[in-house]
Length: 176
Image (cartoon, rainbow, N blue to C red; front, side):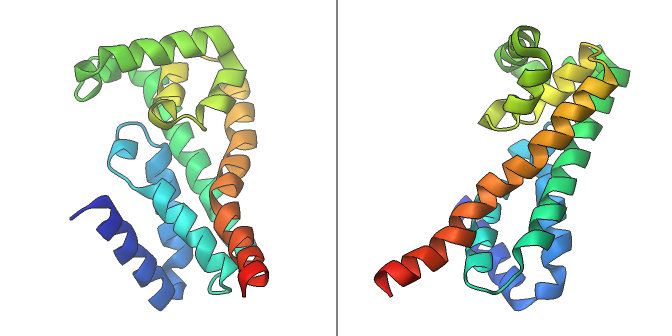
């Protein structure tokens, strides 16, 4: 099954079973933010699609924004915690041991940008879920990590939801 088919199937399920919308969005944002798992979870495409469902009036924006933010915060926090308490074991385990360049890039990114790097790292594809893990392995102060994590998650969720949430109605008035 392709990424497009998976995304389409989940979007249809959300549209037809709205009571599951918030748990699904939470789990997707959590998976997207969790180190390693993020490589397997097509959350970005689905959150963009969820924004379109918001724009079409199928689901509400604020609850989706809140649960997507919460899922992202908890996913990043768990990645940070795993890195902090299992540092080199995590780095030397599969699949990270198969991608030493990615780990090196994340370490260099973290060393160069620190707290701001954790904040900005949420918005950069492959680094998104590994930066919190690396922040943990490098023993970043928990308070600094939490500030970057908690402030960046709602912005990340908004950026993914907004095009569909606000673009669809705007396009309908423009072309409708």
